[in-house]
Amino acid sequence: MNKNRYNEFKKNESWNSRFIWTGLYNNSKYANLSVINFLRETKPFESISNINNVNKFWSLVDKIGIKYSDWCKTKDSSLIAEELDALKLFFIGCIGEYFFYKLFEKHNTLYIDHKLYTFNYVCPRLENEKDYGVDLTGVVSSNENKSWNCAFQVKFWNPYKENYQMTYDILSRVAADAVWNDMINKNDTDNIFVCWLNNDNKVSKALRNSPLWNNIKFIDKKVLNDNINNKVPEFWNMFFSDLNNF
Image (cartoon, rainbow, N blue to C red; front, side, top):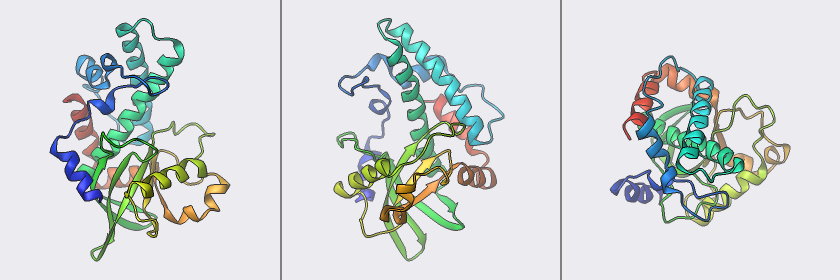
């Protein structure tokens, strides 16, 4: 399933349409506001250094998100304040999803809860697949003899915000999307990976007490910092180079 999805994506890998905002109600395309056009025109990640943890990285992306919103205003003067705020968040989300995609491409093994997971065939959902919650799909294994399909929910939320919480409502939609579209087998465990910058203390009681809890693993800021800085510290520079060369 997900291996085939990956092969289809790699045939003509493109992020162009994924980086185009579709408006407040997802009913139109603003091609002139493409994130890729912004990256090519302004090179905001060109002279970045001393980024060596996810909190610093998020703060950088947050600041550049404001620049992107300002840039959009120069391209379309009719944009209202609500749209400009949404565009900043859209930019942050795009970079967050691309960050996790490139991480799995460059370094596909992560220690999570003292267990080694290996991720293969990770890619975004295909362009012809409607988005109901799943951001990335892949195949995961925890030993040489067993592998299974998995889905990823990317929430590139502000790690400094105390009130951001992962809820049952969010992840039940992700699970339903993944099962319905044959992205995971509902009978597997550890098949939904939450990619975010908080930690698993910031989850709702309803989620923690639900059967869905057995399906979930968190790729949080501790996992990211420990794995990147101890295993692939060069990833940061490689990632910024990728952004500079779209």
